[in-house]
Length: 275
Image 1 (cartoon, helix red, strand yellow):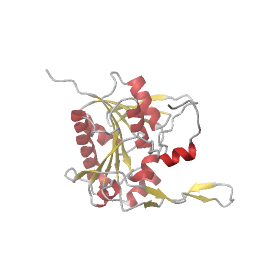
Image 2 (cartoon, one colour):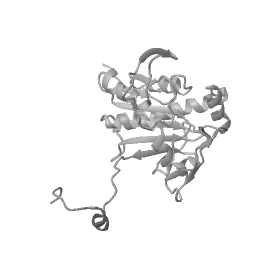
Image 3 (cartoon, one colour):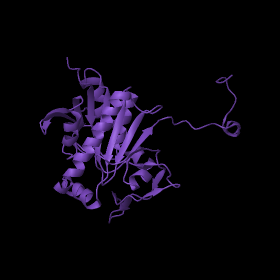
Image 4 (tube, one colour):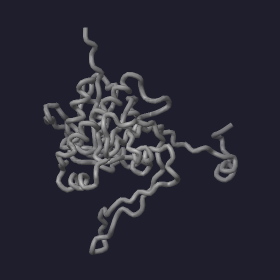
């Protein structure tokens, strides 16, 4: 008797027309039963925002022979509704991506809708992984302008989908790395199935002004994003990508900072809260 394939929820932040979606689904379908829920429109840079006050509309379409549900919400909405309302049984894994463009470093990680969907997955108790792929600048500009990729990148896209499926299969077999809440995977612009893969830390990154004033001085529009590395980036995802490696970054969302005795004296006041 053939063992049943594990259920896997797939989402992204680029929508159903992402040219990376169907290649990923083809690879994942070999190892899992897929439930696919993606935003009805691109939702980049939406982090883990959710649509609390407006109703969300679900629609079924077909993408490359795969049934896909589109949702008029954010990536985190897609993960949440997929896990709690559409997947039966509960998924064994949430796969988010493959994002068009990297999400390496702290600044992009905190803003990414791809990462946000995976965060929603782990908050629901499901192991989750977010995949992102670097692209040559002209190819990324073409995607932003025309919502399509140069066919010359088909080999890169196929390799990225294969790498993503192999990493997803490893998580299904053995779970996440010890202590991780989820994994972020960033693949370099020259990714191949044989590319080295490295477990990394998360580079501390920042960016300067993102918006420029319009001519009337009362409107702002996105201008550009110039990220800057804070520190040397040693053993980080950014460093691994620069070497042409696939950066696999275990993330742990433990946000509490250590509390010193000096700071207790500075901020605390007497009360009945602590013995």
